[in-house]
Amino acid sequence: MAIKPLRKAVLPVAGLGTRFIPATKAMAKEMLPVVDKPLIQYAVEEARAAGIEQFCMITGRGKTALVEHFDVAYELEQVLRERGKTRELEMLSAISVAPGNMNTVRQQTPLGLGHAIWCARAFIGEDPFAILLPDDLVLAETPCTRQLAEVYAETGGSVVAVTEVPREQTSRYGILKVGHDDGRRVEVTGLVEKPRPEDAPSNLSIIGRYVLTADVMKYLAKHERGAGNEVQLTDAMAKTIGEVPFHGLRFEGRRFDCGDKVGFLEAQIAFALKRPDLAPAVRQFLKQYTEGSETA
Ligand code: UTP
Image (cartoon, rainbow, N blue to C red):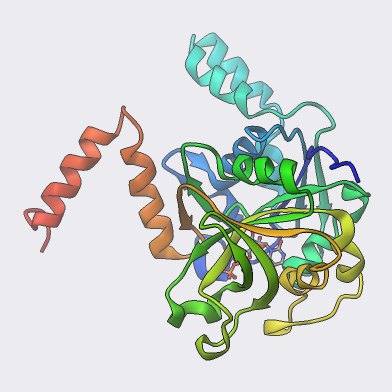
């Protein structure tokens, strides 16, 4: 069967972000900036670099700023024009998505990632789609979703980004059972959500980047609860193994879990050090600070 082109991305942003309270009391976690760009914008830019132009954000209460972020800001643009701030104007126009291409649906109640994806069923239809969890940020030469899209174009079916995690941490992640492994691309023969280290079939964990086919939707529609009493995407994906090809990709790049405080702080430093305008000052500050001259 012909492999359908990948044109759509789903961005789940309806979680409560409890690990970032109080910052997330009135503001979406996905609007937290890494250096000067909100997490959601990194995700949209990454998807675009894979040729994706149609987006669906799964939102919930208190998430309107995410929608506003991709709208036109007339007053701000007017002021910037009057002040001759062309660089800032260019930054704003780079954010905007073509009219009609940024869809949103409400999840109403955050019943789990699987339930969030099911809420996008009308947007997905019968098409393949990428999922990007904006709180996972990947620093890579080739954007991570593009790496997945390249594998998908060859294999079809499901392709997930994977990384090795310490065995004692498997109970935090979706873990793969692995068949043929060429060191980069692995055949997935099973998936377990948050297994105890002694039950984990490997130490290869899924990160928040997926390319899936619509085959997963019929299993999500059953709303079966899994780990944490949530509707787990991993459980529905596991059921498609055998129906569609399923691969994991040890992606090139470094992933930062920005849903976690330490991961978020690491991302700030790593992304700042990639910026020529900031790197020298940040490096100098880190050196001074870690040497202890500004501590105490
Ligand atoms: P997390 O597991 O990080 O949950 O969700 P969370 O609610 O965002 O954060 P904590 O754990 O309470 O601090 C991973 C991704 O899935 C989305 C989140 O918005 C995040 O992008 N999600 C999660 C939903 O959209 N709906 C859900 O029901 C659950």
